Image 1 (cartoon, rainbow, N blue to C red):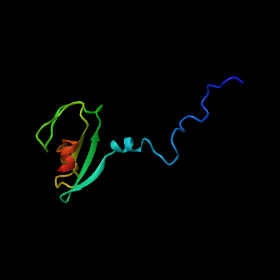
Image 2 (image 1 turned 90 degrees about the vertical axis):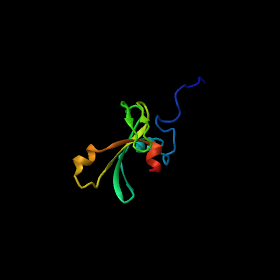
Image 3 (image 1 turned 45 degrees about the vertical axis):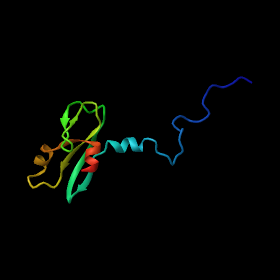
Image 4 (image 1 turned 30 degrees about the vertical axis):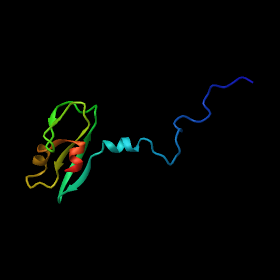
Amino acid sequence: MPRSNRPRRPRGRDVEPDETPGLDRLMAGWKRTEVRRGREYQVQPISVASAQKEYVCPGCGGAVLPGTAHVVVWRTDGVLGDAADLASRRHWHNHCWSIA
């Protein structure tokens, strides 16, 4: 009998149904709310592909270079309103934000 070169299982079924291989990848780009020192912040991860400009990290004073994954952080509970909070957003290295 000749050999069949077709796959035996349906496409897209390489993992068990309980496993979610892309969940960590999807969650990495989702905006989230964090509380630090009693203040609420919005934290938006920026991927390597999306990092196009150079910024100064307020945590270490170093440069966040283009092509470096990082986070953008802004307050959500400022007294001047949402527009002012968004205008005061800052780009942080991932490590600097995690230890801030």
